[in-house]
Image 1 (cartoon, rainbow, N blue to C red):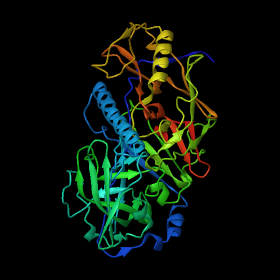
Image 2: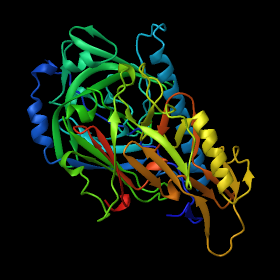
Image 3: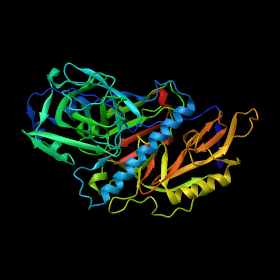
Image 4: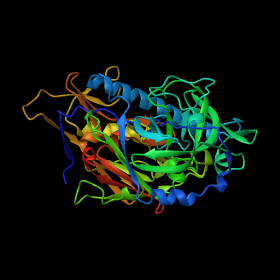
Length: 461
């Protein structure tokens, strides 16, 4: 195999962030229900056939140029990286005395779902880096503007509060009890937050209805960034996430090309999330084990074992423990649908930048003010082929060497005349972002504790 990849200049790439999908829910202040009294068997029976949900990027309806979409996504991705850094720092400092951990939250993709009886439909942000499912609820003490009416618990016959003794309430990082109602408070790294009560409700995804889903009914919701939808759906590893509640052993998502604003991405849950469900008959499946973080404040994330990176035919001399997860829960690398680009530890990024620059046959240029990326080059005069050769890029995960197509790590803008590497540097935690996950079926098997990557035409699922 050669050391380079051909990148079509017609593909002016943009950035997706599946990190978060906003969700809306209905709540009706009926009776108080203990989580331990819930029939989880109902969940399994309802979910045995699984379901499929369409994901919509939060910028898909906006009239933006390619460069504007790119700039917005990079900016949001950097803000999310900052939140992750704050989370990592605060959770490792046991002297801070914080009453509530900071959560990553927010994201780039919206999913449509319905809540309550009768069912009401909402858009919600989906986030693989969060656990709590929540939506704004009436009566509001403080609620932000959202595209759909705010959920009114009084109008749903299937709403039920959760008691302080419930499993969900005990799973909260911080909670208080008033009149045996479980009150939660979730803070995010950008000073936004949601405050309300935990309850259960019927959620509907397409034709599949699932009763007794635990979620947060937010009465006091502060800060911006959530107004793309009516709340947030967590798909993390914790007890409160949608995946954990459904007792589903697997889920997958498939993100369409960033530059394709007309196609939708897909979330698959349960039995429909399998490795046979791909558009490639002879797909090259790469499977790597998941790693659990011993720190409970960061246990929601999906950590992978990254052992090295190759540029062209050169394996970078990255120290063996660069991406290792420490005994205190620091460091490591997570795969995240809500962060746009991939950000790796500074020393490793410097090695990558140097080697990539030495192999590509283009002149360096500064495009930080226009594109917002650190490693950029001048595009050559068009020779009629409409293509340029770039070094290949391989991520060496444990048991899985994942070679990315050029479209998953190169951003080119012919109007500006630049070609950039779609990666950046990070301090502490590294992140494998959604830009690098385009047209890959990312399959999470939570029984086998593995993640698999399968090349897939996501717009055809």
